[in-house]
Image 1: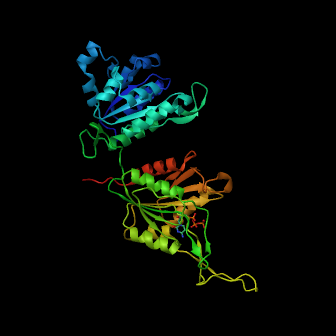
Image 2: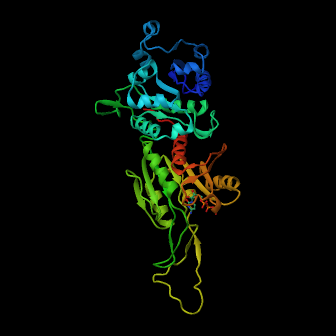
Image 3: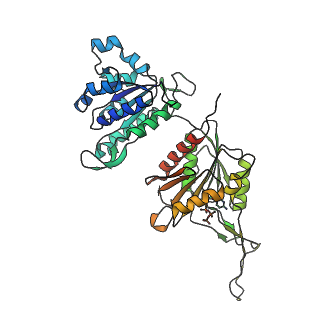
Length: 424
Ligand code: CTP
């Protein structure tokens, strides 16, 4: 049975070229046994016909706030509350602006203002309009109001320009709808904040009640009291994952090697220096539902680090014996007791990225490996962007290049989906 089985979606179709994708969305939702009732704005009628919307949705299309027949059949209040979720696709710049300002001058905007349900929008507009300070301001307002959004995607647009502004694909919107519905509740509900007399809906918190353990940053392996072996890891990806897990409602323990960035507020940070300390702190943090090993652990440490600063003796360089550090990820993956439900490793590779990641998945006994190319040309180490391959036992998915914070948010959403649901 699909997550959408029997769910009622009120789809508001805005007036944009992407309205035709709204038709595909209706089809996809109905295929999953959801019922779809549609409101079209007046401008939407310029792009798709009410007849095609009605025949795909199998229901009457509503468009007029003051139509006696529309209102007699179902008033705007009832229309907006009779659904499990309101979806605006495409959400035009104009509709977004109206929502941000609480305007209600047609059926679509009135239903959006009158609803007590979650609202998910799929913005679609010209790239300049999307990037305009006014639209970004309105989006920030909607986010603060608890409105959920999906997309826009980047790509070539109907107007010939390139950039963000394309409406998310219907398949992506369906996934966003499923996620939104997992957290949907009728107001008032526990967790709804009342600010200035306005009840807000909290964004979904798929990791509420879960504990997420994350290792991040490099380790420093002492040679003597002033020197150490280290690597170029900045800790950014691990810290971004901690922020995303926190935002998803989890309790987060971040076991961090020495880094130069601030941890997100609300995360329990355990600062460590060496691999041995990192291992002890990670083991101590168990049990956890998800363990994510984003640290760049030094593979070796100096067998006997000097108690005092090594001095030049005039007899050449000192001989240094290295011993292998414990593999923290493999150790926790193979635990019989307190093994987290989902164990995720990272693979920083400079060649044969996917083949090496697959081998690492088996060698370490974890559930997923997030692989990335850290060869200098990619600028991943210390940089803001990351291109990852999600390598699991079922196959490989390559994601487009994104900001580390976006990679983190998507990874956390994926990990949350992999956990078995809890009942009660
Ligand atoms: N890892 C770990 N403990 C170690 C080494 C690695 O927990 N002592 C974890 C890392 O946090 C990462 C994953 O293992 O999630 C892969 O790390 P990587 O350094 O790429 O793997 P190695 O085992 O060192 O393999 P290779 O020698 O091929 O680089």
